[in-house]
Image 1 (spheres, one colour):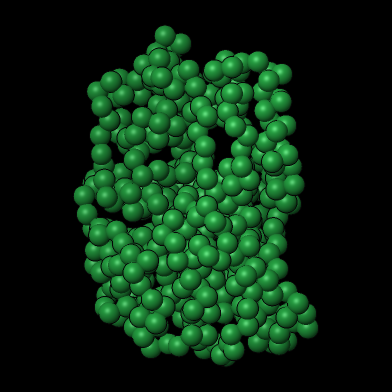
Image 2 (cartoon, one colour):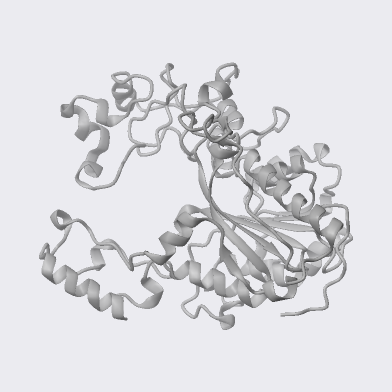
Length: 438
């Protein structure tokens, strides 16, 4: 889709959609980008952005949009920045991609069922930034356009439609980027590999409007068992990040939860409790399946933190301090997500946990930003690559693990036999074969 792109400016201007507490944007800022406009619907997150706007002189008050993106035009955003279509260097976003239209084609763009991804796509199409960055949870690689509950899968139920199979959402996203005529690379990255004291897996899409030689950033850190061997730094641990943090705000555990946590040591979880306490720790989840490592979890000083959740005192999302009988504090959350000390949060303590827990660690944003800057420097030196036009509309899975996962992806998943209404394995295989051929 050629739209007569203008030459980009050189001020490293950025526009942020679904900004939250601006973790991704602050990381990009550390790389040199300057956010000229933000769009965020959450009231507490907007209050946080306004409270810290004095540290962001490039962000004017009229360019802080407390609006639903569905009710906002690209023209309004550009007017607030003083830029025109084609002049923005970078657009960043982390849209929730859980809702997709049943159409899944261009006709769905104005359909509210199309989900927030299509709103991001609409703004991208009209702003035409030189680059874009979109991040999402790793589940987007296997998500379906339409979800069907596990209880409604298997023998006795209709075969899944194409929109209900694993990976159909990713196919839709790829189709959309291809239509927008961007060259896109994407892959799954672990924040710990970029100096973040946290194991947080996220999928990043980086797009180039002009077919420039974009790439995902290369890791700078690795597991201590292999780091020296491959010439990288060892992961930064939770202890490295929070041992000296002065904590003032934290939520609390229920009395029952606290009694269980007091029975386990640093680095342990519910599995390390005597078996007679497992039902108390997990409740009905004990009869389920999966890792369930977030139940009754006490963290380790010597490992990166697991992914920060929006509720460190949640039953299935427990993030207990390694030696103190409390959840991680707001101040420790900020340190693990690498927010600067001067970044103040607005809202209740639960709203603050939500803002920081949902944020992208700053180290991720900085690594992505530096990768884009490297591409820009190469273009400035050598000009656009000879095949840049041929790249437009091409979408590439940039790491081998994602390629293999896409090639070998199952169409769906069933309850284990002990949890199925019909545990007959022959009937289950027959149902799966019907789904495979739909």
